[in-house]
Length: 426
Image 1 (cartoon, one colour):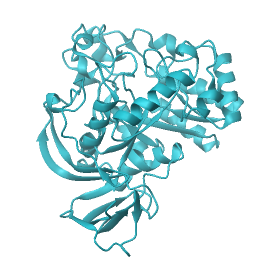
Image 2 (cartoon, one colour):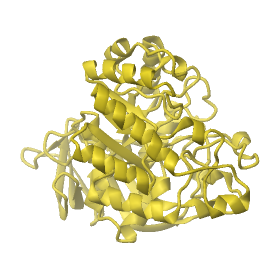
Image 3 (spheres, rainbow, N blue to C red):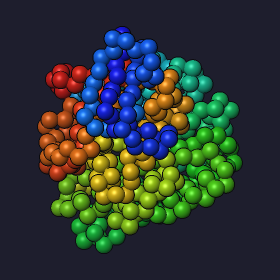
């Protein structure tokens, strides 16, 4: 493999917290020092940003069962086009990833088709039905990196505490969806004046705090490693702060949609803006942005959830929840940068370094010896988003026709530059 040297690059280093002009070399899949790289290919970055590749937690790839919505190939191409070099996939497939056999199928398909790193999570309970614990030990041995029932919250606290206790004995990470399942059932918006005026079934933001309270209490009782997939409200952020101050092994994430959009963006029942949990008030959005900037919320993710046209072209309360985000994560994040709410090292701490740390990866850094998973991007390049030009099979993005800034110029995985030119329908 020919070594490569990036010159005149604006190096975004989230570990050091620096944003400087410099040179970076890669060789044999790793970041290397510039010495001993005779004959290396040189890439002049022309002052553009070079950063660790994004590590995106909570990506849904619809294999097995719903390949018409997203395949590993199209998800991988979308990831590479968006500067995402590692995707941590969800087990809410058909069937659920709840046995070593299904997990092995997923890993094999990912290795064959996806041009980026794929780390699969497995279900915490069988069929994600919240009644019987999945084979956590066998799934861990088969390559599962974490365990989650996704948005199907385990209602029985005794079942969840048993799962947490067993996962803790194996050192396994459990990813929860902090939401009271009874209160949030059937809800399509956050309760308030907007939802009332539109007549949309809604849920109080307190349902998130109640769900997080329950989960953290069980973590306190059973021990273990816990990550809340999305913390999006002021009240839940306050509870998260107390859990961290108490020393519990708890981290949290938030989707880019909840950081850049609010409940008013739903407008006249625009179903591409229907996500789970529902979009929040502007006060909650600002609080979430501040929590990421301070490091209280650890991770920003896309929560990539492909849905086909048929499931979205329905009345708002009947439409499927979710939005794609692999390819829009970086330009949407640039909204926070251009609004001066976060600098680029802070953003990349949440997009790359912290998720890598949570999953025990050595990526997310620009230090010698780290994987050469990189993204080169122009944070200022303007464009109008066209959902039909996205690599994902499904096109359900809330940013369609939005004016955005931030273009990916190149993505490297283990020193290999990823070509995203093949047809997105393959």
